[in-house]
Length: 297
Image 1 (cartoon, rainbow, N blue to C red):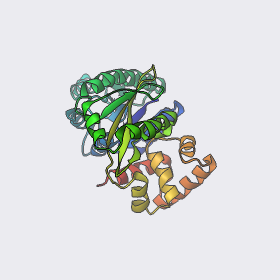
Image 2 (spheres, one colour; image 1 turned 45 degrees about the horizontal axis):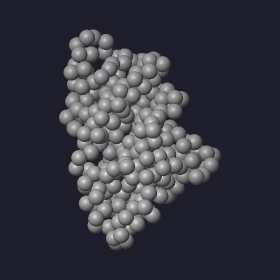
Image 3 (cartoon, rainbow, N blue to C red; image 1 turned 180 degrees about the vertical axis):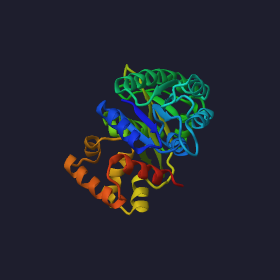
Image 4 (tube, rainbow, N blue to C red; image 1 turned 90 degrees about the vertical axis):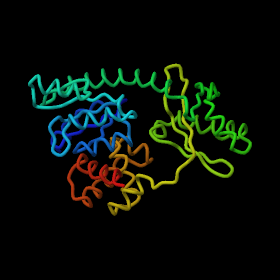
């Protein structure tokens, strides 16, 4: 399913749209203003962005323009949401790079239909772009059985620096690939893989209908995890920070329970503690605080 970034300075609007998307099983990210939306999009590439046109500081039109100036983000479709119905505003949104326009208050069925259309079109375009961009990246592809199909020259150069690379690739890398393909929770972010003298990061890039998959492999870069960042900045326990982290990534309570291998009731209890510590009353506001903390340098 898709991941949608909703950008609106109104918590009520965010909450309403979040509820609509959750009922459809669509993962939701939220941002309260334009600069925050750009930062989130850079870190967690959403499939589509729903963008309020009228916001303080950086309005939706300028936000869209800046998104489209970033080569890494320009393929993400932007659908404007606004109460403005005049043709000049509509034209301004399309000229900024938007692909569509939805008038508030949004119609749930229309919203879902437009998301599916534009997200599907973007995925087709993205697949073609990934093929064009493969030159210069450490990419390799395997079939559904985990057998190597091809690898870029950069990948071969990377492997040449690993001791006993052939054995390591077959005995360590391929099992790691199969684990990622078998577990949806592992497909949303890069996974660490150890080798003699170091480690690397393995990430799923694309998966075709026939089962062939493309992966990216890079040297691991030591960094503080999102969960740890939330724990430190918001004075949470380890488990509370883990629950809040996945909440900020648009996961439902049921999905969080599956990812962390705990009960759904336990997730609810941790969220109650998180809400109390953050001084908030709902998921949307808590997610907004978490995203701000995660995007703070």
